[in-house]
Length: 247
Length: 257
Image (cartoon, rainbow over all chains, first blue to last red; front, top):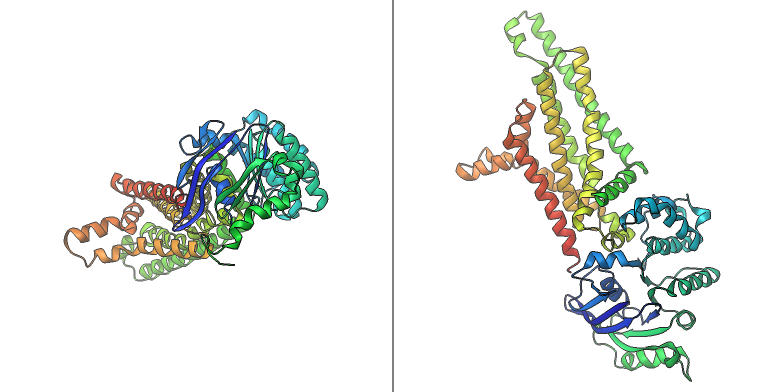
């Protein structure tokens, strides 16, 4: 369960996220959409406790991300935009390290390791060095490190980026399975991915939430593309405010 | 504590899984060995000259500790000014580049544990170096008769000084995501710390006393003379704690920007 309420974040004078509120319940896969620079990554970094908000609150399973940060971090699995990997470590060595870091009990590390290697299809590259892996495998190790402590909440920043079509299908299936019992927030640019995987859609544009609804409600009688363009189009036409016309 | 050890273990392994640790240790030992050889040759020569002059009074003034051990330890301490920043320069910049900084900071560990873990990992490497350079002491004991307690105090001083260097390097490395800046910044800070005592000779009064107290060489010199004074140990410990505390604050503050 993730509850985001009136979240704002400024980088100096630059507002990145403005008054953002949404909720994701257990068993729900929330698709977090928006153009580049809309504030997706910033929002996710605040939810995971990487950086604090300027104002507003985030609660994860009832724990405040700022006040009870450690409790929140124990419950979140986070895959940042670039999978956080130490290139000089082996797949198994790295995942064991993350398991210890996430507080998995010593006696359960071996089991947890086998479980994520299995679910992410990494058994064959167990002893390979992370620096030698292809982008697809690196992404999967990134997902594996987010899952190693079996967290009830998953935050995935563009989990299918850089994967080939088959791997994309695998990862989507995996996320769907994972989402059955967990709360998943998933950011992406790929709209069909949202239609296939997500239950709920939140569209953010220029730091503001422009759409928050169930996928089924949104796509009644029109495609998600149309919904997306309509949502961001309104803002895009009078563009040039907020993040500025740097394009 | 478990978290600290986890992070320290990874840090230490990363030095040894790349050529970094081996190159640093080899360069350190080769140079220290050269210093030792040069000092010893000079010592032998002086000794021979004075025995030829049959001047027992002069001869008795020369001893291995003063002519070899003390200058060797001082030379090694200068060497460490260049070596330690090479150890600390990767600590934080590399995490920031690889994105593993996000992993560390979103894990249920405290910032203090991250800092302490990284410091301890580097400390083990630095202490390995200091202990390995103890072989020069062993050689002297085997073939001569230096004053062992005095030498041990000197090596303890070296170890303390190296730890302080490491804490300073760790702090500088936490400021940046660029390894070159981390190296040069640490080198700069260490050289200032090392040479600040020079001012103490010219500045008068309270300020001069303060500068002399701040000088790391002053405290190190005492220890190479075989004097283990609490005030010197407290000086090193204080710098160490301040360095690590500021690192913790610096890492914490990144989140607030």
